[in-house]
Image (cartoon, rainbow, N blue to C red; front, side, top):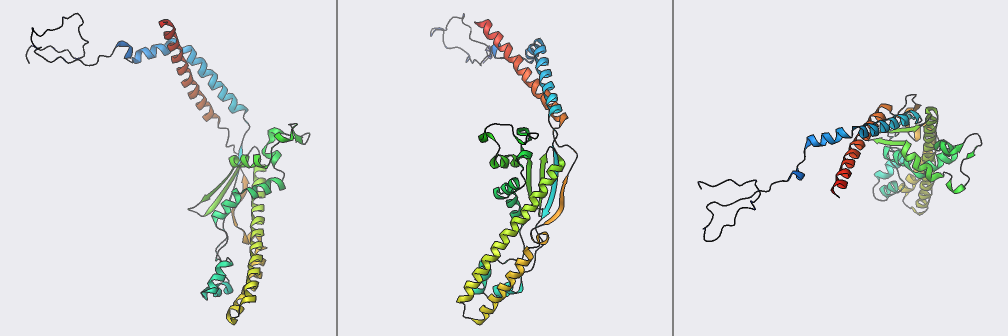
Length: 324
């Protein structure tokens, strides 16, 4: 293919006459590759020139955004954190009567399972579920009047009333639960088997006190649940005792009733029954929010990006108007 001209990356020559059949076929295949126009090319130097021409806009937006972020960081109220760590009670061996009843097999094992006998107390999953439950949170908020504490911006402390005139706009228990979802953290540590609690408020002492209220009501709730379960077990055992005819089963059921009395006495001791306090509630004087340096850096980065966008947008609008 000697004598062939390279026509790659060249547009067709419109002034060249069209080859006719008489002239014969072209000696070389003519290939045309797409040739980008000057409008399709992205020139980094041109982009920098655009940003340089509108540096004042970028600087203005960056300064305003950074100043606003710093002002917010300085005006935002400080937030402190209180922590506590609890764990399930140490596992206990099943009572002699319940163990013997389960060892009987058949109806004995069925009775032991129906009456809820176990060798241990509440596990970490149940502790976590109770702390996150609506009934416990409602109980704590209502009993200790925590709505003004959770919504201080809407509470008039001097007049002892809400700042709003409408009862429909006053915070209620559901609003309190939403707020607790944000500031009250309950985490079940599977590796260590403990439950970590933390509460973030504007006053570390108040946060510490509220955590103590939660632990007190948690123990009281678990005690009430256990006593209700014991009463149900006693009623079940008495029903089975009236039906039983085997002397061995009767003796074991009577022992079960005696054991339920022992369990009821144990449930009265909250410190040993409900859970073990690894770390009691304690509030820290070190602020966790706002993080002024992080807020300032984020505000500067975000406002600079916005300034660059506005500069490019302004240049695009200028070109669009010039083409009209």
